[in-house]
Image (cartoon, rainbow, N blue to C red; front, side, top):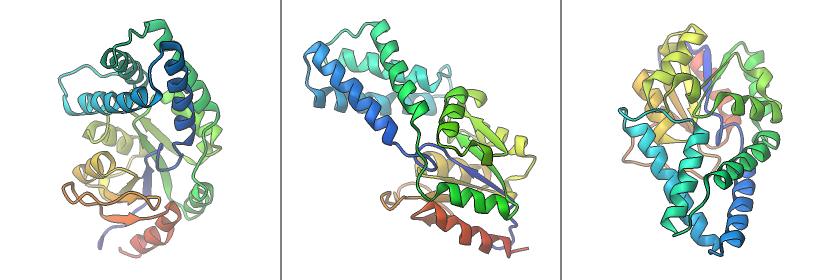
Length: 246
């Protein structure tokens, strides 16, 4: 990182700043409801949905020729595909209601990781501009950040629904940089995935920081992040080190 003067810090949102707990609770409730309603095993629904969710996510990210779909649309897709795979015809109305219940729970019960508010407050006090680059639908992410009581810290928020693309596509990063009026060499991106956050940041020339929350392991088959931290609070001394390089 020698030679860089970082003034802008971008964060991924879900899994980096805010926890998956509300999503897990909401999805368990929906799987349990579908299991009872359609007389199928909970484990079968859960396992199949996770497989279909990964598939539709990879599909929308890897094939640029296909139309963009919002995260909500991907949820609907994955639920319908799950039903087909387990031999249950899930009515479209039921799927839409299920997805709406999930979002209603998540949007009003979002929680930040415990060290997030203090970390963001410190970065702001030290003069950094702070932004979000998130694979999310804009309106929903706004509600989630408000629910987590951290929206006020961000100078800009850039979402996949705005950019019509998902990480690691360079478009979403370019839009974020343009909104912040900075060059990639002035910024770093902090996220919890190598495949999307690190690869996307590296490709655009941003410094990349992978936050593991003590769980994620490095995939040696993927490009390496510039730095790895276990907890988000560790980025404060890390960035102070960056700022000493003129």
